[in-house]
Length: 87
View 1 (cartoon, rainbow, N blue to C red):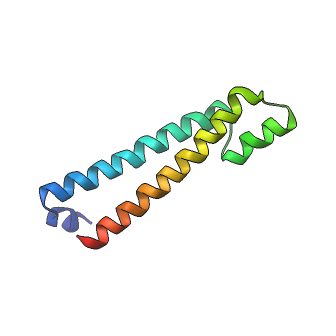
View 2 (spheres, rainbow, N blue to C red):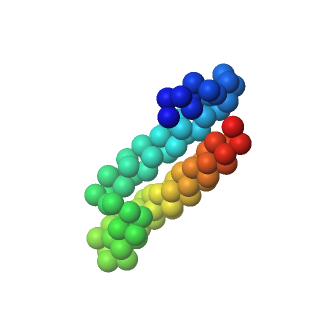
């Protein structure tokens, strides 16, 4: 892996670092929201709302945020994979 990273030109290295940083930031936000509810996955929040254990507001908005963050992380991973295939 180290040899691969050394082979990247500066611009490609910066692009890759920015993508990785974006994934890391979104994962941190995801963990923060999940921890707020003691949840491991979005479904845990939704079940809490459905059972009445959690107030619908703001839990449902947080649930939607978690779903959006997961989609964003996956999208960034895919962009990263495509980028790495091209360099």
